[in-house]
Length: 360
Image (tube, rainbow, N blue to C red; front, side, top):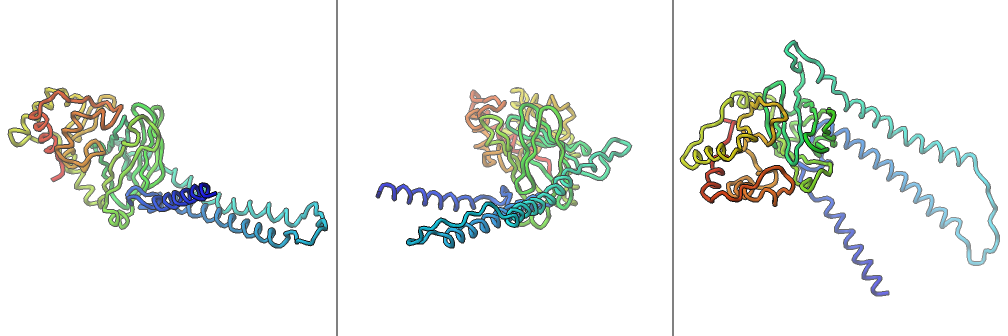
């Protein structure tokens, strides 16, 4: 008996711990703290459906308890209760009520589903073939990194997505290898990226809520895609419309790779070319190569990032660690490990990569 009690106590403790831990997490990764129009609508549907379910559970539980206590057998009662075969009124009530509840839930779900799927603005082109009044981003998922192309602006970035607030941003989603899923919890639900076919949707960030979250959000791959699926993260930086225009101008003006400053960084630049890194990684955001030729993340803004490979703090030690232990840190990725480079060569490469910046 005591052993059973101990097991139940442990079960209760673990359940309480799970409940407490479920409330932990970063705001930028929470779907329960929406930061834009799409997330707000989806959160509202979650609240509505949960409220309906809780209401049904409470009503059924109360009726169940009432029946248990009201019609329980008395100690001295041996009579067989009156047998009732059916009650048309009750049957009508418990048939109509669920239908009403389903309609209450179905109407806003169907309406929002069609509204959130409206990407007609992406199809309005001007005479040059550019989207007229909408910002479009082509998202390409890879094992295990993300590429973001602004086709109408001639800008390509990797790992870091920059978007303006209070404006709908439309996305074309595609994968270059296996199925992945683009998910920004604070902005909206996930959408698959497939090898065949392109999925489209839009997101929008509210400026006030973005400010509250520090204007930084993180996204993840939400489709099991391989051994490093859990490490396939990306960052989203939200800025005002004016700041976004400035950022675009800076990126469009960076047509040449920045000149390495200092002997060590210049040595790293030479190594970057000699080791064949430049064959996969572009160092300007104006990469004109076709998508199939862009085999690795664009490094034009590498020195401005907050993370190395999307998972490590951004510093030279972690850069060297990634260069030599890439397969240990992200198993299955396509980055070769440069573990035969000397410490001096690693320092040179790290110094050069830290100087790859665009923003002024």
